[in-house]
Image (cartoon, rainbow, N blue to C red):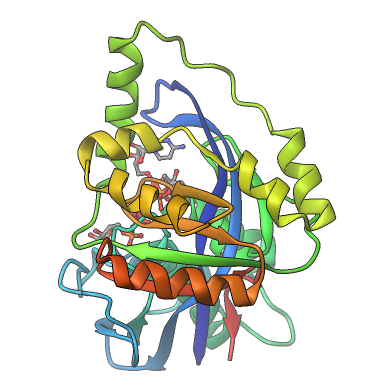
Length: 306
Ligand SMILES: C[C@@](CO)(OP(=O)(O)O)[C@H](O)COP(=O)(O)OP(=O)(O)OC[C@H]1O[C@@H](n2ccc(N)nc2=O)[C@H](O)[C@@H]1O
Ligand SMILES: Nc1ncnc2c1ncn2[C@@H]1O[C@H](COP(=O)(O)OP(=O)(O)O)[C@@H](O)[C@H]1O
């Protein structure tokens, strides 16, 4: 059973106040792009995980646990527990999504494992786990996991796990600049809180951008480019100052939108069309401001059996 699951970029990431449970209330507009991790699940004597770099990719996988800490392993155990079976499965993960890159690669693998294990162990004729059950299990694993199941473009509220699909027309063309080394998501949220406290800023109540929804609905890339926003960007730039140069290089190379993806350090650049994306990628590759330059389009579907 092989499932592929997409990376995401956040088109709007509005961070509200810190909640008592340690999470922040968000408006998180997710957009799934055509950069995929692939997970193969094969029945085995016991749960095992292997992690490798996908063919043709330059992703470094040394930071990814190949044991029970892997989000995919945790997903397999959850599905097994819900179905009352042993988690006897070997999970082989081929990664193309940068690790700790702000593109939700771990969440993609978790979503892939939820789907693959449900397909392996649940009854095809009378399934005990519905799509909603998988979304719920996903939310237990991480705030971004439900979106990796759903895909497309969607508005996430709460900690980002409560999703409503957003209307989006056509395909948007992206260029991603990956970085050497990741950024820790909790550290970036904490830096965002620290910066706000230092400036005496109250966290605003997050609201969906109407301009963003209208740019998506009309498929207007130029309009989308100017309304992209990420409240975590300032924090990511404090923790990784070199990203400022990367973003500037993208602007100067003609990107119609540029921002840090989620908690970073991957930077996302929006192009007008496929040709423009190819040009932008070529210019950025020559600037030496990234570990690698990757092109992708969105929206694409969530975790899918292939
Ligand atoms: C920032 C975002 C944007 O989509 O993704 P990445 O850029 O890391 O991929 C997400 O909010 C990350 O979601 P995910 O990576 O699933 O985080 P979780 O495992 O749920 O939480 C990890 C930690 O991030 C912080 N966290 C996460 C979500 C949220 N709404 N508020 C938070 O403060 C908390 O410190 C939490 O302990
Ligand atoms: N299957 C997985 N793939 C990647 N990272 C994983 C996985 N399982 C657990 N992790 C841990 O989660 C951390 C963040 O993962 P990732 O989802 O790649 O980044 P981000 O949260 O920035 O999108 C990694 O540094 C790693 O320690």
